[in-house]
Length: 227
Image 1: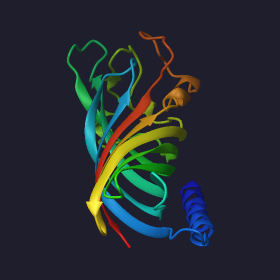
Image 2: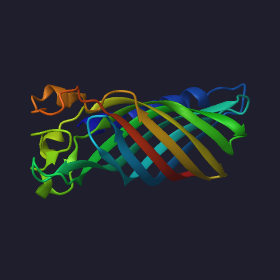
Image 3: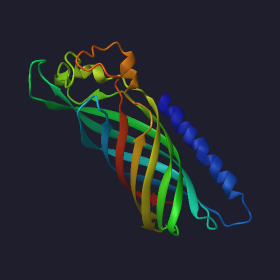
Image 4: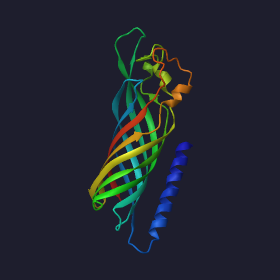
């Protein structure tokens, strides 16, 4: 239900920006619509856990307003991604070895981006805020459920499921291309503590009683077709 609400919100935003800018009569402003997809590299930056970056995928759609007389363009976008991250754990509390347990995180983001023109609209720097909904962390393989998370004495791998679902991100990147085709690189950083909900879950944090804190770090490389 929450995913549907996000999609409806983006559709309304796209409709608003198309109507409001499209009716401007002084300049020949162009509206565009694009779809894109590609790969991600995902991590959680935290001092509480040992993590390992992993790859996933991203797909999205954007509505862009090309403003010829300005040094920037603007766009609304929605993007969905399935991301993966490894967290170090061990099979027994007395074991010295470690394995990386793989987790999957689904994210949906809506954003308003400014595209600073370096070479007209052919090369831009893209920057702006994002609102993100992400699902809980899901283990890829249930056989690791009872592994002990490194840095803790009794915290189980399955206990890391319930994370904060709504977060605020910032994005910076670049777009380059001609005509209807562009390549995009984007870095997304989570300003809010996406692991904060774990502090309210009455977990056994023996061995590391510091507040659990983690910020999302995502790289995305995509190709976009515009209409």
